[in-house]
Image (cartoon, rainbow, N blue to C red):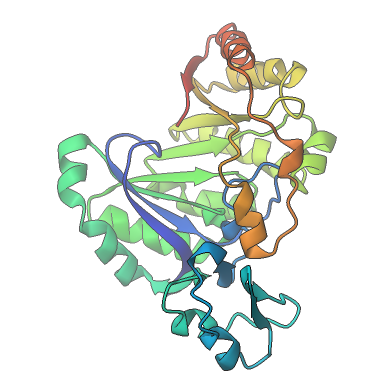
Length: 298
């Protein structure tokens, strides 16, 4: 079985306990205004431009079968309407000014990569984390990866937005040692406006996991003006009432803004701003009022 990933990040310390290897799946059903991994939204591989690396050789222009690539004084550009993501331009680029984001990989190949860091897992209590994008956007591949990881004796974490058919979540939960579960907004209409989807599946799946006794830590991305204010209290009340004990507050950062331009995607990140420390302090204090153990960051 094969799936599509866009990164394997080694020595990760913010994606679950211990030292971990984080595997990032391509494809996500949400389109959050503040997304910091836009290269994970589309399930298919796609070319990304790094214009500062270009040496203006023009090889990419020559090999493109759809005449979708041009080069000027600013570096390469891609007409995304013509581009079929064949990857030929990235293959000939000597400086990786054009880079293909995403690759097909088998379960066996992926687990072989993860196994290379077993010594760090054994020493730190770490393991493998499946993230994205959204790993549940490739449910069969995720299930096979989890099954193989558990058979190899690895600790497993799934970092998910929770927007998936309940049967997909139910199919994997026995092989997941910890869920890192995003809660972006409690109001359904506002959730739809900010992410493109309702939050019904998200809330229902979270409650299903807890009903089955699965370990869950909530993650709350904090974006001032979009999901702070009364939504913080609504989130705290919901988590308290359903029995979640831990929540990570993740202040928004704009480090990924330029990725949108390199991918030729329209960006909504202009509406998102990094929260001042006072806003973070207030959100932490409010969540703690509901008996939650609050962790800043990963």
